[in-house]
Image (tube, rainbow, N blue to C red):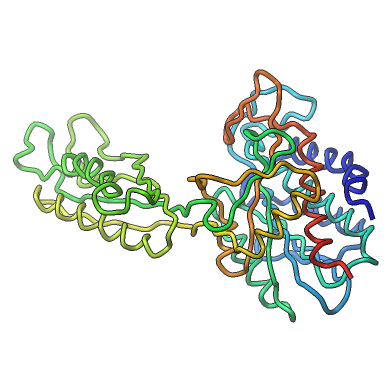
Length: 389
């Protein structure tokens, strides 16, 4: 079976589905129509599926009872942004658009399913097609899917996924063994004092002044306490305090994100941030507390699974480029790779339209549709190499 020709055969279908998803984007945990359409497409292909958790869809392609168990993951949610670049398939939902390529992720996995259907007599084992909701808000999708996969009679041997890239040229693919995406933690530091009139700060305990010092002090933690050769980012991104120009508030808080590559560092960093915050607040007569609101681990690529991926990239003629340095962005695919050996790759789909942005999460985000078929070919090649009889 010529996998390249098979991927090209289903390229038009892939583009058609991607355009549909692009025109009808849905936010995380609201992917009602997207999941429904995915289920309908799997039914047309004769692929059994289950809806797992909150609208995650997992198709099960069991070619033989025995053999390798492979999962392929695609996230499907959109972002709360107004699309500003014109096309015949521009978003039809005001204030919502696919600005990170998840529409193409869903479409390329559906097209992969079509390819695998035509190769079913050549394969043994099982492929799980995992369509995941709510990646942009870390809504629990990968945890639900991972639990489902691990509960299967033969479990799951490995999981792979792709994130399309508007910055990379078509035909270029990147990955690496080890950490490829940073872990992400959303944190909040709240300082509590005693409110009062702005004219009499001596009768109040102002929480804003210690908070202002804390902002600068916590951002110095990476350089002062951790290895400078290991990337670590602490970014305070919101400051909230007060309701009027002449009222000293009872409390104020900062909220931000923390990016890291070693899980064992997370609690150490938060403890250091909390200690600095409390000591600073104490010096002003205030109290402080730190909260870990949400987090996802780093995406760590397994050596064996990644070497198979790099081999498949070569077989389909993609230009492989090692990912260096690792990406400081985060992806909740990490909840799958922390439980199941996995590999995350990135394939290029950079557009040559002059008005298009290569930045993801941009209102002028735009992809070259020629970048989708290589993803389908890669997934199919990977599955064939692993499951061929």
